[in-house]
Image (tube, rainbow, N blue to C red; front, top):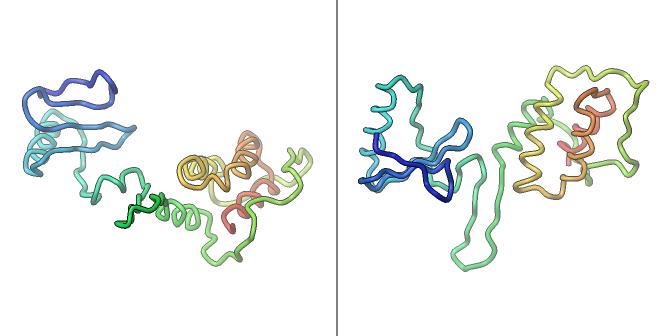
Length: 171
């Protein structure tokens, strides 16, 4: 359809003649163009070719992938947040009414707990760890150590490891 990959990033496709670009990230895309009608036209052309695409207006580009950028007018520091992902993790684990904690981890290191009770929550340990890894690497470095600690036990989580995840969420 006239797009070529950028030399600097093979996930960025630039149209050879028109002012339109597409940035791919896993199963998401950002379409950039001065005219929304042109974006809708090209998405329609891709659908006609058999691609399963849904065009959603996600607001400004800064909210892409769930990271919100707050840039105050006074020129002070930019704040990044992922409140949507935090709410998703809380809802995923059913911890909407949990009691807050002051720290994301206990003072003693999280061990393997070989003889401990098996993990028995209704939610997936690995999925929760994945969401927390994304959160900790983008906007919440304060939980990075605790998340790394629970991630080490993804192959054989025990009840104690689930409790450690819950503590991070309470924090």
